[in-house]
Image (cartoon, rainbow, N blue to C red):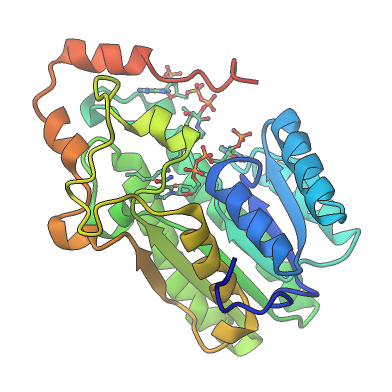
Length: 289
Ligand code: HXC
Ligand code: NAP
């Protein structure tokens, strides 16, 4: 693929991507390895991580470190970082792991709210502090890239805990860019619009819709994983060495049409029964292996 990025752009960089076994995390990992990076990925499902690692090992002839970790647990995050550091430091952390689903906010249980905030907000904070503390102690530079969502900046009906959590991560990005700037640690973020993945589509798209609706996107199509992965590769690379505290939006212009809100407009009309049917159509993560 011709992208203008040098094929050794990320040579010598060791990168941890949380939730790197699937979806956008997997696409970023693949692109980063193509550009020379050494990859570490984590998630809750070991089998998913093993499959991704073996696919990349075949493709690139280099090993991928995989670690089982629920980022909602600060203990598991610390254990993961100890295990990573026992082989050597990482240079880049990508906060990509997330949980989300559409639901009426007034019907959410406390556990449902805690689950999303736990993954996106607490998990992002635990991983960032675990990496930052180790970089600061070693007087080593580092980069934290957090994957947000357009709704962190604009709000989003029916995915309120996700929007709240990612808005918090954006605040962390701006705040730590200042606090850790003198230590040569950069924090950047991207806010993607629509980039179809199995994880997102199965939890966010109305179960009743037959075809994706791109009417809210001026460029009239969803994003390609390669477009996001190339932006992220640039941001974590030394080419972006003077960018910190910034969130880059990559959404085909949909924010200027109010975000790709076809789904939300439709959901505003739903009855409680419609919502029950939507919930029944969503995957059960624990059973999906
Ligand atoms: C209401 C729900 C629910 C739903 C789960 N819960 N799904 N409530 N509607 N659809 C409730 C459960 O009943 C439970 O509360 C609580 O949430 C925790 O659910 P568990 O299944 O026990 O949790 P867990 O197994 O840890 O799974 C976490 C999860 C799941 C977030 C619910 O969906 C998951 O693992 N997701 C990870 C992958 C993912 O979400 N990818 C999409 C990212 S896309 P009670 O009270 O009953 O115990 C993305 C795009 C951003 O982020 C753009 C947005 C516009
Ligand atoms: P995805 O494939 O479902 O990715 C989520 C990943 O997070 C999975 O690999 C999952 O693995 C991991 N994860 C979830 N809970 C975890 C936990 N508690 N601990 C550790 N890992 C956990 O969805 P995606 O679409 O690629 O999303 C990737 C990122 O892009 C997310 O931050 C999402 O918010 C953001 N985003 C996506 C879109 C989009 O259109 N796709 C738009 C805006 C933003 P396990 O289940 O094995 O743990």
